[in-house]
Amino acid sequence: MNFYRIFDKIFILLLVIFSLSCSTMAIDAKKPVPTPSPEVKVLPENPPVVELPEIIPPAVKLNRNTLGCVLPLSGQYADLGNKTQDAIFLATGMLDEKKKPLWKVIVEDSRGLPEGTKAAIEHLANAENVMAIIAITGTAEAMDAAREADKWKVPLILITPREGVTSMGESVFQNFLTPTQQIKALVEYSFYDLNCAIFSVLYPQDDYGEEMVKIFREEVMRIGGKVEKAIPYSRNQTDFKEEINKLTGIIVNAQQKKRGDQAENKTAISVDFEALFIPDSASRVKLITSQLDYYNVKGFQLLGTSLWHSPDLLKNGTEYLEEAIFADSFFTDSIYPETNNFVDVYYTKYNREPENIEALAYDTVGIIMDVLDDMEIKTRAQFAAALKKVGNYDGVTGKISFDSDRVAQKTPFILKVNKGKLKQVK
Image (cartoon, rainbow, N blue to C red):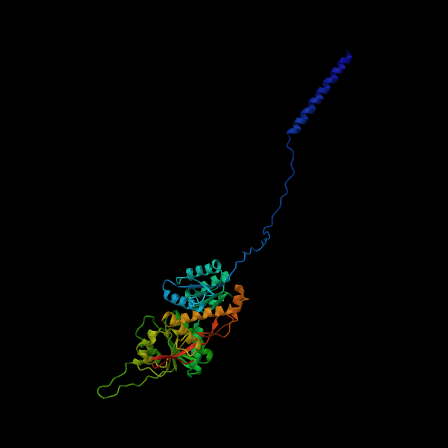
């Protein structure tokens, strides 16, 4: 009996122990298993910039003998653009029906607008892959054209009067008689050949007139001369009596005419300068000089700019302009054989005489073709490098070289009014 009782007690004790063990395990199972803390990385405030490798676009094959042209074929300057196109086609031989031309010319119409000019340059540089571009621009869009050409690294030869345009990039060239070149030649001829050292100026109060009088002052001072007076006038002015009063220092009156057999009073009013510079159009210059004659203001050399070079200059009233001189980049009756040959060929093809713009375009194409005669030149960079070295190219506008700023240097034509006609004197 005692044995069974002891056994029962032991059995009960084991059950209690077993129950307690199960409860502890259940409680432990419900506890979440701790997970290790994630590693926290603190980024620096200015993380280093990782330079990605440069993506170089695939090389495209240049159309070596394809010339791009950006011209105002429509709009305000369409006549200028179309004349230029005629000269370019003539220079490349595209109009020669007897032989297949070696050159292809792609012409884009800029419409004479900055946005049209930029779009045309981009298209020619990237879609047509031309070796070089010729562009005719005014002063307004010249800088835009230069920036666009530099952006695509395509050689651009600009025919524009805008000063400083080549500063936009190493790919930009200029073939034009700039205002500085023009006035420098005029002042030097006046000083050394005509012995004029004291000058006065009558000029229009606009951008062109103010730029010209500024350059004129600088060139006269450089050479050791003196600008006595510089008198502006309104752009739309027709009566210049007040300006002539300032120019002479006295109140001028019309020439006094005598009655009967008495002679006309022609005592000239003396002036304190030796040459008078008038940077304005031919029609305005004729109006001013006729009034100078009306008030009997004489005894000085008349000087002008390329704006004088117009058919209007020699129509009526040329007696007031006798012996007047001005500078320009081209003259159809030049003494240069290259000029004479060009005029003959151009007139035979188009039945008209070429003007400055055609001559400049013809020379520009000639220079490009001359450079590319070297078959070792295969890239735009090689072409631009060779173009910089052009020296004493015999063009229809004279001998041409490019200076360190890639601006064409040439000796201007010095022209004089002689017996109602123009004559080259230098």
